[in-house]
Length: 180
Image 1 (cartoon, rainbow, N blue to C red):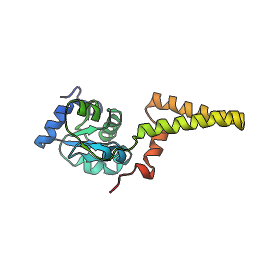
Image 2: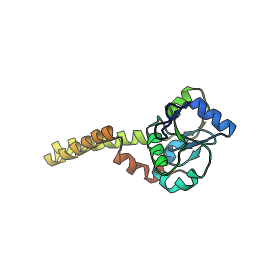
Image 3: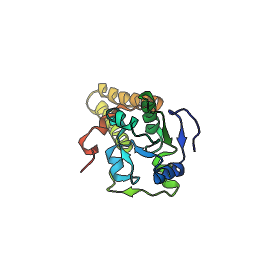
Image 4: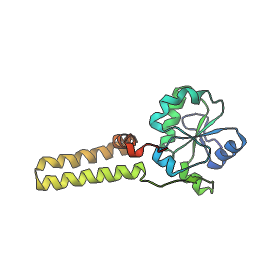
């Protein structure tokens, strides 16, 4: 089940997480955005978006059962486990491969109304701003080429650090908040 005893890197297979949930021996914590959760989630999962995790650390620390942390592929779950470990939550594990691996293992999910994922929104926003910089650079003033360069530098930075400012900004937009 676990590949490491370090809570910031411990991982559990989706099947092991499902078994723990079914037997009451663990809790599934979904750290994806509200939009992603509304579109598809595991029944019974506790939803706390990564950007709101710090506000829920006390209640998560006091749960008393292992936390199986889930996101789309595992990157945000890793960041969540690091924050949880720093706050004293010693039994948090990443669900290896995230929701994609959960689905691939044939484990059930609840689907809702699909909306654009945060990742797709970032791609559309970055691509649109880059294209706008090129068009304005040729059509209005060459200084607008700096916009394209800034967006490109931001994408490189996000790829290297796994931190995306545009993604964090988009996650706070009203259309990305949970409905209902």
